[in-house]
Length: 285
Ligand code: AMP
Image (cartoon, rainbow, N blue to C red; front, top):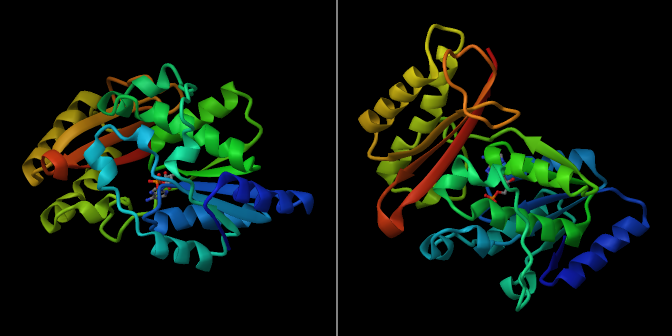
């Protein structure tokens, strides 16, 4: 596996694959890898001749400086995981190279970025769309792999690729979970032991939604139940529980009798130690 610290090195490596007419899949990450990331790599390996990855803790998608600073960066371990999974090349660029001095170009989905999780984290999806565009331009892959766990992110990227006619395929990969149902996340290791136990509540709320589907229950009833579950079982704060149409992302109300997507987020801890966890599920009656 070639470890590239500059865009030029990475491009040169990928150019050798292209010269041999090999297809290229990319997996973009912020590092602190876990089995969720590795599921994307495996999927990419099965669909392409070559798999390339990136590790970049993107400053423009973080709201709070503290969250950015505290983001784990176990680089040696990450490289070992990519290496043993058979990744061909990884880019670990500097912030200075990714965001050249005096840069003034951003990419933004105008509606999708400003609803739901975008309200809780202003500017987040602009940062994501911008960095993902840069990484696509750098790697020029045939396919790019993203987790369904970051459901709105996946939707933003799909829309962006369609709208801007980017010549690649976006592949969504199902969420990988811990044995108790908690969605794997690089943020999980920042949870205190208490909060780690409580964090299972996100998956429990999504399970609960599934059991109510097709019954006489309504979205309002489900939201009340979820508020009670989070408040009653944990010290976390329910930041969002959005029930939307999986296609349009418009809010759904009334009876639970049509396909829905739920996006939820719960914050554990206070101030600088706060950890925001997200989870999602698509449910079809
Ligand atoms: P991140 O390093 O958090 O930016 O995530 C990089 C990619 O891995 C994104 O496409 C995420 O959606 C995906 N990902 C993160 N956690 C999981 C998970 N538990 N299961 C599947 N994909 C995931």
